[in-house]
Length: 354
Ligand SMILES: *[C@@H]1O[C@H](CO)[C@@H](O)[C@H](O)[C@H]1NC(C)=O
Ligand SMILES: *[C@@H]1O[C@H](CO)[C@@H](O)[C@H](O)[C@H]1NC(C)=O
Ligand SMILES: *[C@@H]1O[C@H](CO)[C@@H](O)[C@H](O)[C@H]1NC(C)=O
Ligand SMILES: *[C@@H]1O[C@H](CO)[C@@H](O)[C@H](O)[C@H]1NC(C)=O
Ligand SMILES: *[C@@H]1O[C@H](CO)[C@@H](O)[C@H](O)[C@H]1NC(C)=O
Ligand SMILES: *[C@@H]1O[C@H](CO)[C@@H](O)[C@H](O)[C@H]1NC(C)=O
Ligand SMILES: *[C@@H]1O[C@H](CO)[C@@H](O)[C@H](O)[C@H]1NC(C)=O
Image (cartoon, rainbow, N blue to C red):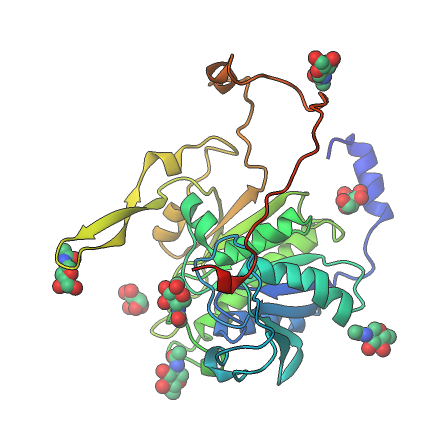
């Protein structure tokens, strides 16, 4: 990236790929039987890619980046839509398609099972070129949903492993449903929303391949968060071809608030647009927020994120370093502190969590 222009061009000519087919893992948080993921898988294969679906056996919405593996070798209940019965192994292949794998874990755990088990044991791939997640049923907009969404969690888990990854989320077109409920035709004459969401997603992948470097589709540490508007094809054709707009995570974004009900003595969540979730600190502040893009009409929002969550520069303005001194010492990373970093022991099984 910091090479002079001439050497970039030379490199580009030297490594021009003979084939633009990618090795792609498809994951999600709605589960391996959901309509959106099945259509995306089908259309990525139709576009010529080598694709494996590795996805949760059940709905794992809202798990964020939690990496939780089951402690049970067998499923205690049948999978979503009864595609696999109770008593089947916790990891396995779809009875109808040996390139579709399910696992009883959170979306981030499934990403790791894909990379560390499915790819070495069930493919001849030398590397994974891309991980895609979704399209999720329902939008995942802004920094709060970035951490909360299992779809995005599956994605940043891949980016942290050095694999380019893209999270896709639909605008809540229809309900979360099985792939067996995808209709070939609709009232509007346009395809099922699941098919349109998948077509849009494939077109974005193809755009990256066309412009980019097949051996590194996105820069190291980068990922994309893509949100679609509600596709209306089940009813009419007013939103069946949304335009892609580049966006940022902050801008118009919601965060939860706690709403107390005195009758039930329970809290539920409400939404609040708070300045903390919408401060523009990194990236291009002239871009519209993804929440604003999707709510402004028939538009899709594409935000570029990185997994480097550090603030831009501790010596910059505002000078946060100065606020911490003298209690917190400033040292650079070359200074040896005489101890090697130690990992904390974590709970690692689904069933130990409540
Ligand atoms: C493509 O990406 C690989 C891996 O990061 C890198 O070694 C190579 O130089 C890149 N090529 C171009 C043309 O950017
Ligand atoms: C999936 O799980 C989430 C979070 O628990 C829940 O809100 C949603 O209704 C579930 N969806 C289905 C189809 O069960
Ligand atoms: C690996 O490639 C060989 C030769 O093309 C093929 O016979 C075999 O089935 C492949 N294995 C997997 C797991 O895809
Ligand atoms: C699919 O078509 C059937 C028959 O017309 C209809 O009952 C059903 O609601 C449709 N499904 C969706 C998701 O639109
Ligand atoms: C098309 O359907 C959507 C979703 O039901 C609705 O909001 C919109 O008003 C409809 N547009 C037209 C032109 O009928
Ligand atoms: C509080 O809960 C009760 C019982 O579910 C419900 O009828 C009522 O509408 C709720 N009140 C508010 C303000 O949401
Ligand atoms: C890091 O700190 C050491 C000790 O103060 C200093 O010698 C060195 O030049 C510093 N390196 C950088 C890159 O700032």
